[in-house]
Image (cartoon, rainbow, N blue to C red; front, side, top):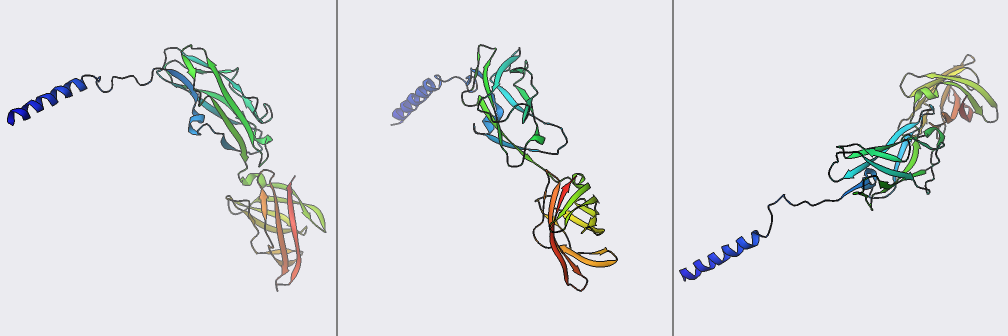
Length: 276
């Protein structure tokens, strides 16, 4: 029995040696020999459109952006030029919604590097809230015969949107104030005591000085209850409904109530402030 067991062990070891001799040492296999190029943003978005919001500040300045073109495979000793085009299905219009910064129709991946960038800029001042403009990039080829295009990630669509953040400085200056049933008159606003408040100098067209607080997380405006002296009489001014602002146009709308110190209502109406 011992001889049979020993013989079985020798046969197993011999078979194992033959099997393992069929495999190369771990780490010596080359898993990817081909080289190709792809758009980085297409890989992270799963090939779908990727939306991005740009701040509109009405300052006349474009918002610079880029997309990255990757070389997948070994880095090369010489530059690779990758041709691209703006797809005809794009709804964004050159010179209206965007401009190209990269000149020509190719992007360079430098020698001994793995990526290059296509640069463009978004003309945010020309875009209204709620609008979506699509800008689609297609890679069309390279100047290296052995560098192909990724079939899955050779195209990418940027969906352009805008946001208008609250900037108090934009709400300071001369305004026209519409008071239905009365008319339109001029008020001037200055910075308030907090970073998100402004004070106007001609509330009710009667010389009242009133402070408004603006939210930075929504479009809400708050007219806190406050005592206001107008024409030698002290009134109580308060908010009388939903107030809101437009950070793109620097306008704001505030329903209000004016009452006597004893609480009797003198006037309820809405002020619409439009930047002059």
